[in-house]
Length: 344
Image (cartoon, rainbow, N blue to C red; front, top):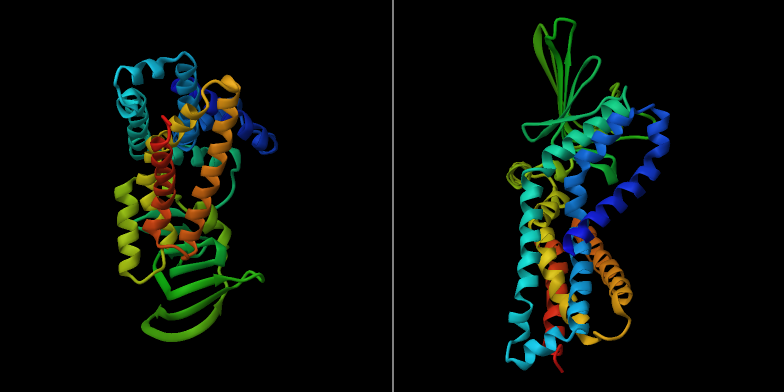
């Protein structure tokens, strides 16, 4: 049942996403092979995203069908507790959780990177994108190299900004370092807390508190080239967070995503703690369709809870650790409470 639910959600996700992107595929004349490879590489990430809802639906249907057949009544009459009776279901959910965790560490980072490369260079070619290396973002421009430690899309700002201007022989002519750089509507960059160095014969150094500069690259190159946490392993993202924090930069949204790399796969087990007693409370009313409807409703509520918690964490309202684990704690608490009344 779980395999069928996962496959169904994978297919549904791909179909919906394809119709949303169809205009873009046609606009840039993407070949059928490129589109196929794009979605093939997207499968691991789609599985990770949809597996909790698929598990929820599978558990609700499985438990409802077994309850309608009086299997649980027979087990309870034989002195078997609800925990032992549901142990195989919980074990299956734990296996899917482990598969999701392994996939997010081994398959998803490389596959997501491949999918993004297809979207950037095959589906939408001709744009300049930042590359992530040595815990920094880099762009090779027409006259030099731009670099940033942290990208803040919501503020149109870069932290740890650096610009290296080179001549035709690739010799360093000018270097600009700034604590932050904001891309303005007029196409100029406003740099704060920085130093400008010129290497024309003798070294010339000028410090500034705030100064405008014009560079050929725009913030869009950093935004579209930003490496999302889904393309990093836990170790890579953890190293980036430690390095950025040590330099004094605000990377709370990356910290939230770091903790979510562990808390999200665990949802496959946590959500089953809610689904099992929920399905046992009214086994004879509504049948399978009620289980499907209940699963979609519970999944929708849990998704809102998860999105709201992560959003509050990224905005600094909640600590990153709490923001990532709060949905798991609330869902598990609700499930354990329902377990207590499941046999009443």
